[in-house]
Image (cartoon, rainbow, N blue to C red; front, side, top):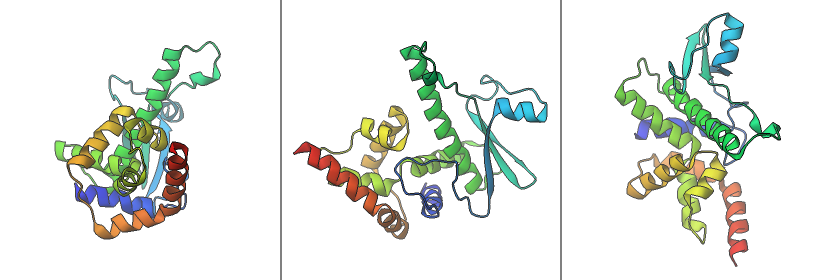
Length: 207
């Protein structure tokens, strides 16, 4: 999946904001026009019936008039309600992380110019999303330099992904890693100061 990973890294290199947690709003998509919305709001604007989670479990991308619209399901902001239970909060947080993965996955389809959603295309979009949200050059650098190593829980917190996605990513990097040496170096250099500061702070707390 080196092509998918390299495409994700090229997109990251084009961003002004440098942070472990990627924020989609305000991203520079180059010559592509990409907007984000919920199924509920899109249905309200267009006067159509909103698609349910049974019809579309995660999300999809609509392309019209040169604009890619990535749609995901609305997530209730339960943190704002004092009556919210722990389970409700966890469910909302899980849904938010799922939406982040869905958006990254849909961006993969866009940047890889997929014309269909076959098994091969889904695997490529999955690889793109993994690299976009959890860039291998950064993870490998953190894992090498952090005195305690890099745990899935820490990866999840830093990069805004689920524990499951974090575990899968670390397991994958232990097995193999295919990358463009040039892009790998460019990503590492772009995030150098952020990595250095985090490693210094984290290792200092361990001593």
